[in-house]
Image 1 (cartoon, rainbow, N blue to C red):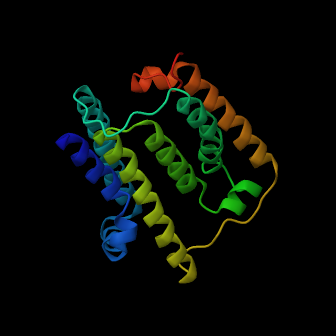
Image 2: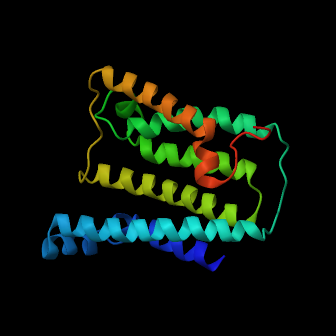
Length: 195
């Protein structure tokens, strides 16, 4: 369990610097340059991600279970992941109507993903992993609203609908890949019980 926690602290910690220590972040950028800061950020994030994935896998070998969900719940969660995948892709393309309306599609995708995975995973490791990501995404969204009010950031402006089409098609393709076997290959568990 300790490695899962270490991974979460590294991964979510580096993703929280802008929230908790914006002056430190800016000082690093001013002192080292933006590209160096991005490099440091990426290295810490990747190390954290690898450790948390490994730690989660180890923790699942000897789970502390709080609740067991009915098998049909995996179908509900699988359906709920469709908008999460679309929002994930929308966050990576220029703004269309979806990105402009949602404002932060990546954060909303993380919230949906984390909440849905909490519904079907009642063990301690899952509570730490998905609960940690859910809490982080909520805090980051609140922080983003504050930055917006302070004029530090701005909301995306709606662009051509073609970016929404790309987000929807890309999200559906990603969803089919995950349900079709990518989730089982990466995580070791089929996203839908009985598959």
